[in-house]
Length: 317
Image (tube, rainbow, N blue to C red; front, side, top):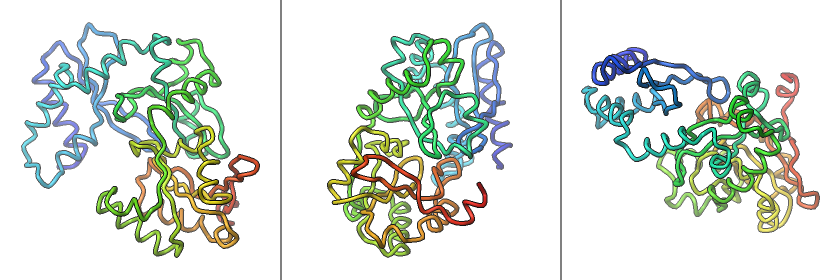
């Protein structure tokens, strides 16, 4: 069954079970890097409050899993149970929606993440954001304390309702994100000994082989979710640089993690941009790509700069 057929069938079956007093809609939203995502929105006709939605591709992945039969009924029952508040995670999400416009509640849940600016111009028009080199810092409300996915991106409508600006959002997120998404820094050899899936392990081993540089380090957070934002944690890059004994080359693996290595002369001259671009096209989901070139952390200046941009990238603007 094709995805669009699946989406329509799920919508029809859920509508049957929820009854005529509920409005069932398929809504499309833009994710990072221009990727479109389809969601299922279910709400009572007399209910105006914000409510969580279901990402249809998550249900479709479930449907396509090898251990799943072609019977849609378990998927439909799960979705109905979720919309009726029968799943703990959904009840948490409903709590967030109910409290969303109360800034005194929301300020403890504001987090930040990184996006590539040029690839997300349309999306960024709707969001408060702060520039960071050729990237942008954007904000969201966390879904749960155990590191799930963001339940609500902070857009201009929400920020205006709170009466806060970008600097105030950043100040709150800078308190919350390092605390709730604890930094994780470890050499690849340790990581590859069993902390990743087989697919991730194979991909990283291939990268190491192609790069020919064994001393690589993974920087992310304990949840491996939007872990590239650890680049913004106060003092963290300086600690990493002191551990490695010098400036750092930063390779943007994805929005979820970056790769660090000591910036000796050989590392600075390596064609990282070509390797990053190739990995982005072959091993990273389109909406998870962070950047197509490396960055350099200068220890003495305590700042990050762009470098190693290829001629083709410069000509593309």
